Every structure is written in structure tokens, then in C-alpha cells.
Amino acid sequence: MVKVLFVCLGNICRSPLAEAIFNQKVKDNGLSEFFHSDSCGTSDYHIGELPDERTLLCASNKGVAINHRGRQINRVDIREFDYLIAMDNSNKINIERLIVSQNLNHNHIYLIREFQPNTDKLEVPDPYYGGMEGFENVYNILEDSINHFLEFLKVEHKTYV
Image (cartoon, rainbow, N blue to C red; front, side):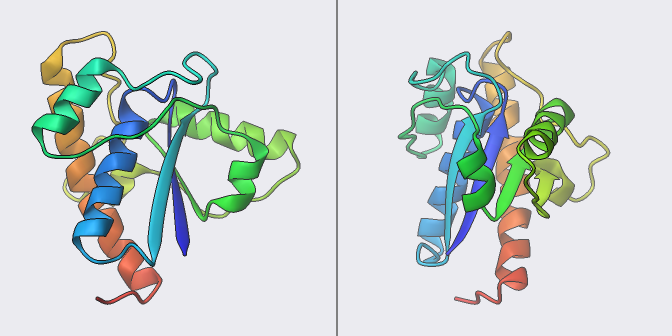
């Protein structure tokens, strides 16, 4: 099974939404035996907390269920997950610093928007300090990026269902 870890700062907005969208698409496409995802944050700000209520509302409005509690990335994650997918450059740098500090290696660290065609922006904006429109924007960015990321994974891992 290919394991994907979505990473943002606090693990209450972007990354749990990415995890939920990815897992829903995997399920809907009959790919649950091949792919699985989880999410975490680079900080310890929201360990054990539910996602932001606006994240939950946005996902619910789109028919996507979120079942997650905030957690922080750790060395076990680096070993267990095949793909580490950051929401922004700061998250990616923090992941890379953790890898170096723990004397680990990882070859598949990406920004999620690297998979989104026709965009010149590589970061998913953090909607935390804004209103619902920011969460809707993040949902749309993630949905598009994840569609293309999932297609990449299917080809990369020869998973044609």
C-alpha cells in the first residue's frame, strides 16, 4: 500500500482537508487497497484537537467526511510514509529540517500544487485568519491538485482500476 502524508502548520485546516479529499477520492475510485493518507502539522499548536470548524463545514458541504485529530509530524512518519506532501514552502522546509536532524532520508517530498497544472502558484494559502471564502478556495485548490496527484500515483505505481 502506498502511504501519503499531507502536512501543514497546525493540522487543523489544510492538511486534514487534503487527507479527507484524497481518501474520499481513493474510496470513490475503488483504490482503497492501493492508497491511504493521513495528515499532520509541523507545529505542536493543535495536538489532539478537531479540525477548525470552518474546515469541517466546508468539507461537509462538499460531501467529504473528516475524521481526524491534530498531530505533529515525527520521525516514524518519515519512515512509514512514501510521500510527504506539504501545503507551503515553510512546511516543506520544516519537513526537510526534521529529516536532516534525525539523520533520515526521504525521496518524495512535494508541494501539493506541484501536481496542479496551469498554475504559477505553488503554495496553498492558509485560510485560518480569514472567512469561509478562504476555506472554499483551499478546497478547490486541493481538489484539483489531488485529482492530478492521484493520477500521478496511479501511473507511478501501475494501479489501473
